Every structure is written in structure tokens, then in C-alpha cells.
Image 1 (spheres, rainbow, N blue to C red):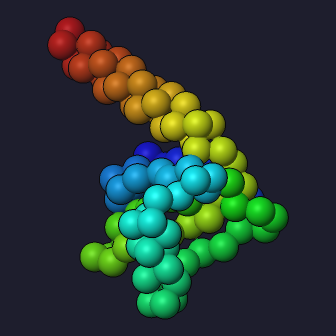
Image 2 (image 1 turned 180 degrees about the vertical axis):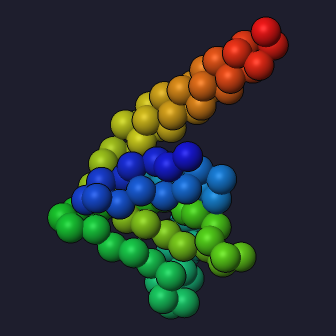
Image 3 (image 1 turned 120 degrees about the horizontal axis):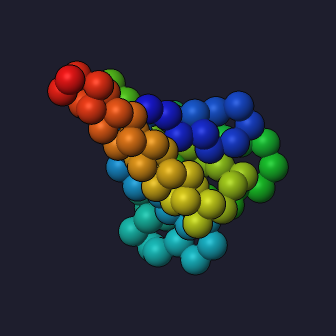
Length: 97
């Protein structure tokens, strides 16, 4: 399953660590993003970043800057998870016959 974060970019849900609101980042969150930038694992977006998506890929953390608000990404995440659950239930129902 994938989460669309804007600008034709999607990230795998199985590696999703967290979604950070770009406004009012805590000191620890800002340091984490700075550390990832130093390691060249930062993927900027077009326009102003409104949120940051932290993903574990191939054993390393990558931060994607997203032009989409964190609240909107959270809604998309919940929607994708509920669709996956429904698909799983549908398959289980068909297999029970």
C-alpha cells in the first residue's frame, strides 16, 4: 500500500515512521530533519513544505517534504488503511464458501 504525499510522489506504508507538521516543529524533530539532510536522505518538494514524512527505506531513514498538510496526509493514511481492511475482509468472505 502507498500513501500519496503530493507532486506524483507516493511512499510505502510498511516503512512509514511518522508524519510531522511543518509548522511548529519541535527542536528534536528539527534536529532529526537536519541530520537526515546531512546524510543526503532528504527529498524536497516543489513549493513550500507543509509537512514532513519520515520513512524507513532499505534500513535507512528518509524524509520527504510534502506540500500537503499533515492533517490531510493523516486522513489519507486512515482512508488507505480502512480500504485495505475492507479488501482483506472481502477476500476472506469469498474464500469461506
